[in-house]
Structure formats: C-alpha cells, structure tokens
Image (cartoon, rainbow, N blue to C red; front, top):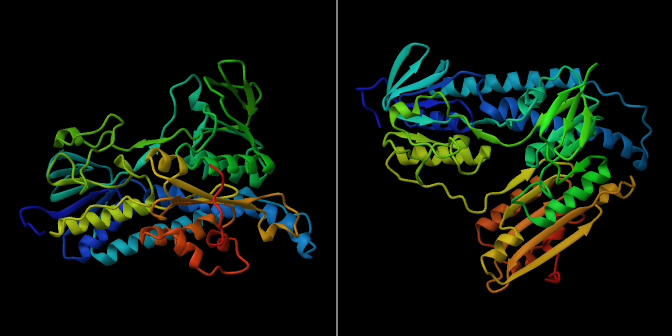
Length: 453
C-alpha cells in the first residue's frame, strides 16, 4: 500500500465514525495515514447525533420514572428539571469523547490535520493552503440537515442546534416524519414541552413495518404528543412579541416558541472539489460508489452518509473495515442484508429484516406472528403503554424474515435477534429456544399461532 512518491498512502477527508475507523485500521496495518477535519473529531454521531440524542432520551425518561415510582412504594417530592444542567453535562461528555477520538488517532500514528480539505486533483488535497499528496483518498464527510425552501424557513432550526439551545421551549413544532422527528418529539415531550409533530404524509417512519408505525403513533398520542398527519407547511411567520406561527396552505396554524426542521439529510459533498478530481455525484449530491466503495476515480473511495446507501453509524464503520481489507489486497464488499436498526422514540422501536409488506412484495408465502401486551414494569405503576412484537416468516421455508418490536429496550432486544437472522434462523428454532422469564424478550420465542392474513 506504500508509495513514497506521495506524502501519504491514505488521506481521509472527514473524522467521523467511518473516516476515523478507516484511518486507524489502515495505519495499524502499516499505511501512512492522515485525516483532515474542519470541526470536532467524531463527526455527526458524537457531536450532534447519536450520542447527545441518546443522552437526552435518557434524560427525558426520568419524568415518567418519578411518576411511576409511587406504584412501587417510593415516596418522592416534586422533581425539578434544569435544561442548562443537562446541556452542560452533555457538553462535558462530548468533550471527553472528542479527546478519546484524538487519542485513538494519535495512538494509531494517524496525522490529524485541522482544517477544511478540498481536492485539487485525484491525488492532491489542499488544506488551508497546504498542498498534500496521497496515493489513495477517502471521502467520509457525512451528511447535513436539509431545510425546505419556503417562506420564513430561517425562523426554524435544525437538529444540530437543539443540542445548544439556551433553554427548553414551552411549545415546539417538529416538522418531518423520519426518525429524527420522532425521536425529538419524544425527548421534548418527556422533558415537559408541548409538542406538535407535523408531517405531510398519512403516517410517519415510511419504510418501517406498518404495525410498528401504527403502534408507535398510538402510544405517542397516549403520551401527549400532538400528531398532525396529512398536514403541509408552506411558510413560517414571526409573531410580534415572540414566537413563530407555522402556516399550512389550507389554513392550518400552529403558534409555537420553536420550530425544528426534521425534513431529512443530504450528503455533505458541496465545495470539496470532487468535480476537479473527476468524481461522479448522483442526483442528490451523493458520491456514486461501487460495491467496494470505489468512486468513478480509481484511487478515490467514499463511505458513510456522503454516499447513498444505509445512513447508520455502524454501517459506515463496517464499510470502512471492508474498505481497508480491499486496499490491502482482499476485495471485500459490505453485506447490507439484515441490518438491525432502532428508533429511540418513546416507546422505542427495534427492527431487523424484511417488513411484512416487503416480504409480500417478493411474492413469498408470508406468515406473521404478533403479540401486544402491557410490559410488567407498567403494571404496578398503572401506565397505559403497550409493547408490540412481530415476526415475519417465510411459510414455505420457515425462515424468519423479519423481527420487529415497539416497547422498552427494543434496540437492546433486537440486537440479539439480528445475530439469529444472520445465521438464517427458522421459526422452528425460535420455538425451540427457551425463553428467559419474566422478560419481554421471551415473547419472541413463545408466539405459536400466526395472525389472520
């Protein structure tokens, strides 16, 4: 991999999860590696994504926990929440993680170059006026929030800004129907804000199993979130004296203190000089790559959210690992089958494999198994929240095609079943597995009768 005609063997643009993993592993295998980053180390996930969001999810659960405690014999006073204290604690943890990433890169022998990198040609990178050459270049610049071009759009904020708000808004409108919208609706509602989630479609989380979507919608309404489906937004207006008015084309209006745009993300590929190097982009600005993450230019690769594949942190890391194998003479393609994922909504979603609709669209003989129940932890508290679990099975082969859940610890539970899916587990093997009692997870191995088609 080493070519002394260049300053480096591998130059990585972007120090997010995928870029850092590729840099570290390549350096550990003897390559001369540099990584350029204009922001904080760790990328979106560490700084304005997965990590701070999950910390806020934890914070938002305590209100219900305090309320439920009395059902288990605890006597508590009136709890008081401090948004500034949460943000300060979150900032301390993110700063610690930034330091961890720096130590990992330094310890691997990777040179960290602070500044915005652009391509001058297929082997040359410019960082703040410094010209650097590299045999291989990796684009790992991630994505950024998308804001629709409507009147007053600038009055709203994107998810990045939520993590630095000086105070918790009393009323918030969240516009969008993806996982970011759903997660922040739960967070803000749990922390005490009045939340309206506004989505132009009939039901949020398009692409997830229909039963998951419908179950979660019902549980969120019971939890106090105002779900406004089939609702368009065509402008935002500033209210004299404070606040924002969210307006729809048919007269709908919402008066709130904060508007969060959660209308998707786009690849971070503008202004990188990719055209100068001959790198082909897709219609959405994504870097076009082949199965080995190679771009249209032989020595330039891309991983993570700047490509149009699966926008999940663990996927970017896996793509980076596969790339390093490829660069070391062992061509390795990422396996995108049965990738588990979670939505940290309230209650959370965990899912792996095919949805029921996807399985039926493949013209399979589909059997579905479904169970809805109130988790044990809610019985003494009297909380009216239900868990839904679902299996999608190929009736001809008995193979389990999909495992889906809405309920406490869904992400933790589905992770284990994702291993079973990778191993090609059958429904008979699920049935033969002894459950752990009493747990919610045991329900996945005790569902015996399929539901009516």
